[in-house]
Image (cartoon, rainbow, N blue to C red; front, side, top):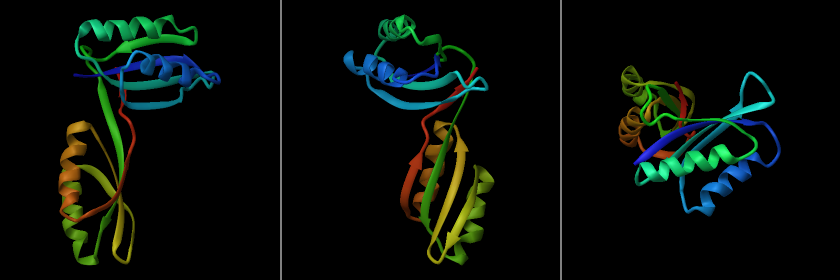
Length: 156
């Protein structure tokens, strides 16, 4: 099962490497990772999505994270009410006759055409994991040429 964990850390050189090393040394795979500064530039916010077979593994991850000296707080969103979102940028096949059809897709999803040229459009969309999956199924009908997406961001 996938679990979403947020970690407030001191914004210092090597912190990300130590946290990633903690996961890899124990054989835990990070499914998604997003890191950025907070309002306080000396603190960073990490959202980590990890596969954990059971509660014991998740508890172990939380304990190990809390032992790291640069970690301020660890929050496990698994059983807490929270909002999470991902951002996706996709380059798709596009012709002017597709515009109305594509805009119809965005009536169902939070997204827009960022740029379009001759036979290609770049779109951006924001949503939770299920919304992004459904959007990608719709965009697949146009033909996805390239796709990039952020890791999950979450807030309580």
